[in-house]
Image 1 (cartoon, rainbow over the protein chains, first blue to last red):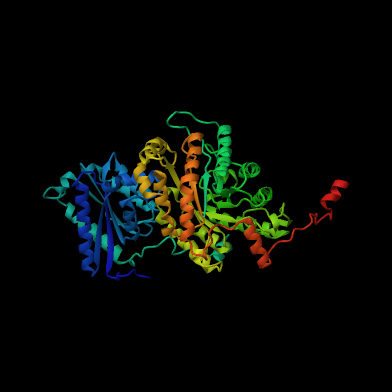
Image 2: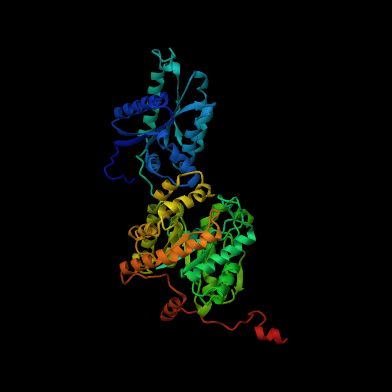
Length: 214
Length: 384
């Protein structure tokens, strides 16, 4: 496997996508905790992870523009390149009307259909009460399964109460769930070769191949 | 360097008046636009090909054949000819006919087409777009270059002893461009044959076009057609001009905001920043388009989209005049003075292609039309 300049087997990149709408948001808070947990677990395996945070709010207009125009403009171009080159993705959305937020889905819709194939993804969500927690299992997990991503077994939901002292759940409080999810993502990322960015021109078949395959 | 206009032939309501032309009016407007561009001194007129409303140009060679007879100097071309859903045999026949009728004052550009339902309407599958473009074009070239073709492929019924007529003018087929925005396979195809490559970057950042053109140039050299900087490159563009740039913005904004392709999305200002769209004074267009060769190298053809989004015919004709009198002469002179001697100024003309074919000994002799099965010649059937 070719490694990019300055990349070594012990370096990985984690892109954290957060679809919270307020700043600061509990969605970003959960995303940060999940990222910290993954970085800590990777460090325990001798791997240094670079974390890139993407607040979808910051590129919301560009997301809509790309939906209409077909190309990425402004900061969104950079964001899409980072996702394409990530070794692991943490995707966190607020739950609106029983599912991921519209902005979150709009962002997923503009990803290249192969952008997340085989990619370790950890999903998380926030909501007012724990009654929304299964949206992770019936909405987010199938979405990333469709994209053929490698989704961590633990998906983390944080309700408002979860931020209380006891983590809202005395038996399996939020910090424990975050640690477990971070460990699962770290294991998947560590088991995988580092991602090398694939350019549009890296694998163009020669004309003889094109003609032969016609 | 050549400068021309290309049209998608959309029927769009003028957002400032609410008026919509009918198909007949739009087709006639396209003819007027082409004739006006010829009189104004532009180099190229190219029509799109579409098979769904709100687009009217379904039959390019009918239109271009008429224009061949009613224009003097302008090169007639396409943007693009659907190499995927047209029968390559019909394309060989129709464009050889256009070549003869126009006395070589034409070329054409292959494209795959991106309207999903057109593929099944014409019995094809959009997922086979690239293989269709590769196989159909390979057959098209054989039909032009070989008098009698035996052929079998994956997508079309086989041919035994088929001769496409009329044979190409002077035994030399038309020059062909390939247009693609996203698919390096098509740039590879253009490079393989030594054909032209046009990147229609009107909805895309130019840096994307620059990467694709660079790839095409490298592959052109790889296949031995010349140096990379000698490859034949075209770009798409889009402008709206007025003497005063504020007036141009004010006049064009309602058309931009309502345009079918990008309307209600990015702002005019964002779109101007991110794509080659330039709305302003003629000098602004000169400044912007004069710099494109810094990104793609010296290129041979710059096309402009002018008649879309419901712009009235009168406005389009005025835009053509501004382009032809105030912009093109400056850009052409700049390009010519910057051009290295070994880089072609223009895409090859028919006369240049004939001279090159004669020098290379690859002119295809015209054969006396004869039916190889019955032995009858054309004059025999008339007398019998």
